[in-house]
Image (cartoon, rainbow, N blue to C red; front, side, top):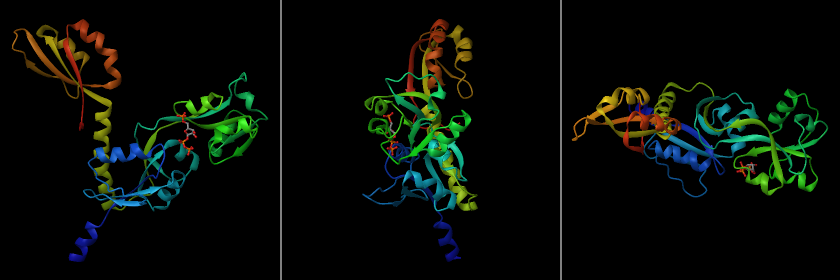
Length: 294
Ligand code: PRP
């Protein structure tokens, strides 16, 4: 009985995150916002959370798909670009909305770009050979693909290639290397991925973690909105701001006026602000939401 209890208590969900790179900070921040405290000692490759049955494995980005497929890690936070490039048997459970970037084709900025036929017969440097080959095949282009593992942007400057296919986020690396983006191969963001079916106890931990992750993501995408409304505009403003179920309405001390509280998606706010003002709303406040469970 005791042995059984010990075994049950020791079940953990192993989650792989990028050891160092564009996803690391935001991945750890997401876990922290899910209430998971990780002791991240210097140079540690593995850390156990103090207050949630999760073990974090810090791994090289390019190795993570294989580890997830093999079951060394149960789940991982990974860029969609790596998932597509590595073609492993892993599934996306949730798009996480951070580390947005694109895998793009770029050429020296002084060259006129006539369209993707430009790449016919050209030498293209990349670390993403599978994704690039897929793009070339789709466009019916014959080109020479040169695989290099880093500093791809320098390839045209040193005469190694005529073009590159690499990740672009702000575009500043392309700019400082005299290149321009001419086509997008794929768009990417951080995703939560899983491999094979998990044992029941591990799946239960994943379900709890997913519940928390979804609450954090919903709070990031939504805002709490408060405003004062003439009573005869409540119906119209409720139509504009339906909220999760419907807005909360509280009377103001001043007769004929109410305070309305609701939730609005961040992207919708600027679209509806003029409608709210036209309907008679005043004193509009928009606040961040810490966590949101719908
Ligand atoms: C990518 C890419 C560029 C840079 C582009 O590298 O290879 O170097 O980001 O970003 P920017 O458009 O904001 O300048 P990453 O940081 O992912 O590391 P890597 O060198 O390991 O690919």
